[in-house]
Length: 81
Image (tube, rainbow, N blue to C red; front, top):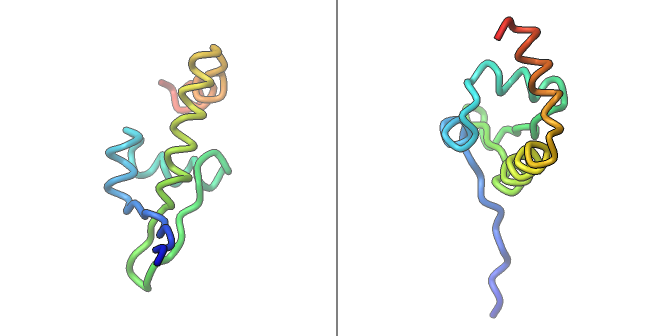
């Protein structure tokens, strides 16, 4: 019998550890459409699909490799950093 692959979920703490993005920035990026959306697992628990987070991380690495980090630099400049 083949067991279906169950998607792995990351809670906020795990996403912050993986990305290095602070909590408030994480939600800002999400609201702006620049980070995967979280969803409610239960009334008090939200999570992100691990695949979505890893895809986002890979995309950021590819942008960096191509020298296309302008969007993140622009966001940092808006915050005064």
